[in-house]
Length: 111
Image 1: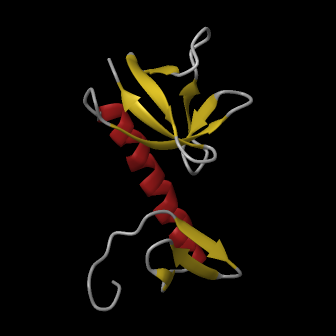
Image 2 (image 1 turned 180 degrees about the vertical axis):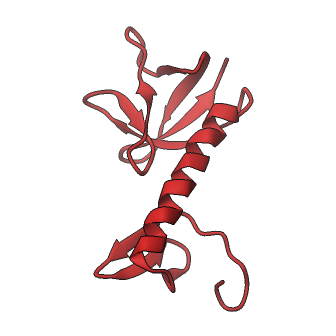
């Protein structure tokens, strides 16, 4: 609840026993609740990619040295296909990696 309304939060950040959401700022959540929230939210984020249709995708992160794509929480999505600069295969599906800012990339299903 935030200001008396149910609210969906993104990933939560814990700093010195305080918990913060990117949109709402400080929230009344314990660090333990934040850890569980982030675990479940991460699972849903990855499942959303696995279940998406061609043309859909999501934002993930890529280590530009190792070419490993992962979620915000570090769940490995996959590695850029050898011989390509921007294709990733996962669970029989092909995704195109589009550059974002910094280490952020958009992973879009193409097949």
